[in-house]
Length: 347
Image (cartoon, rainbow, N blue to C red; front, top):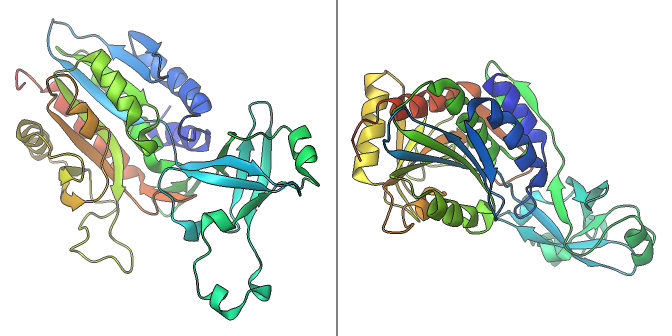
């Protein structure tokens, strides 16, 4: 399948942080044709191995399978669900969103509500409604009714899937952070062919709540070099200053120099820049952003792993729906593929 077809499947899969089962099973299926072996470790990271011709370097590619979402915190006596957030979500985007409660047996639709503005006091209407003032309505008549429907405290809650193509090569959908990176990783393994190095393509869990899957999987793989495939903020929308970010959607892979968790190893940065330049792949440089990627934990594993990030510029990340350029995904996969093929003895 094409990278766009894989992205659509991955975007529509559910995989809130800590409950990545559906996304993980899909990743195993999509990676299998291009890997020599696939395992799922104790943390439930997916590790696909493509063996090299020689006893060369070990390269780890990491893309996280989890998405931001919610979790059932309480069921009121009236049958409404109160929730906590799984990952960084702006409260302002939650109201009136359609969600799916993943009970483990059935998927229940619901809608996020709050006290209607018509009956709010003037001072209430001036304030942002915070998530602890909201609730999810699943049509239950009582707490017992909600429980009979299958809901329990701890159930994951995902945003409703919606994937669509808009414009020439732009798509929008759920969980592009980081199913786009997952699609790029699959495409990279597909394109690689024979290499001297052994490649470990790892779909990590629980990135959105502390980069947790990257910690354990990197320790286990013990790579010589690591590359995180993730998204970054696209700054080409109204209200974003160039000082905040110069990265734009459709202008090629973004290479991070530094973020709040990682200063990219100079050898890694030079390797990626030289590969892009030699192969005439447009790329963008970024630095100083808040937030970080799995590369931050890869870099600190054992005695240290030279690590960096190849990112896709995405609009509206950490919201129910995002937007990316398919050309950027193609270019990211091409850059990752060529970099691995030309790694030589750099590390």
